[in-house]
Image (cartoon, rainbow, N blue to C red):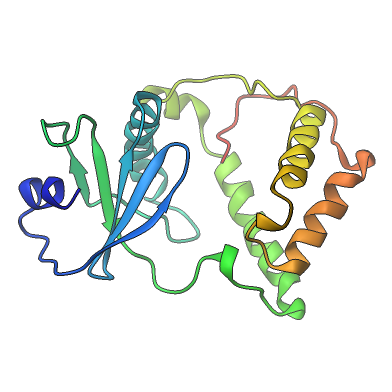
Amino acid sequence: IQKCIRDQFPEVEYSIVRFLSQGCDFRTVEVDGRWVFRFPKEDEAERSLLKEFALLGEIGKNAPLPIQQYRFRGQATDRFPRNFGGYEKNPGETGMRSEPPKEALGEIARELGRFLSWLHGFDADHMVSIGLDQTVAQKRQAGARDWAMTVMGALGGTLALPPAVRKACEDFFADAGRVPPEYDGPARLLH
């Protein structure tokens, strides 16, 4: 991975490359505490990354919150068989590792709600025109709720969420009355 970055982006001066995380789709490394590079593990993840390049560039223009932009777009080579990307690391801690004060949760929820309303209001036809495919969600609302409950149960105590956040999620998903009706409106950009 280090050689992939060095070969294609010699302007990135680094002395420390640190493994950050690995999921089903990507391996992620941090370079000198300043850059984050994502390497797709499979072809489908690479296709998603290429869509992300286009999408983030487009929605980042007028977003009400900062949207991370890929500064580096690596090409497939003999060293690594897929496109990969790198961006400047955001300062601070991930929300998965912090527990905000209870009195701040209302404002955080409002700000997140404003951002998601803005995102969902984005012109879906424009997104198709820049190369994103318009697909219908495969999981319906109740199915998504059931899936989330199964995953949370399977992960048990290994799910890295602050206790208050985990409890709120469990309470939310346990209430079947919270499942909204099926959406039948115009296409929307979803997160």
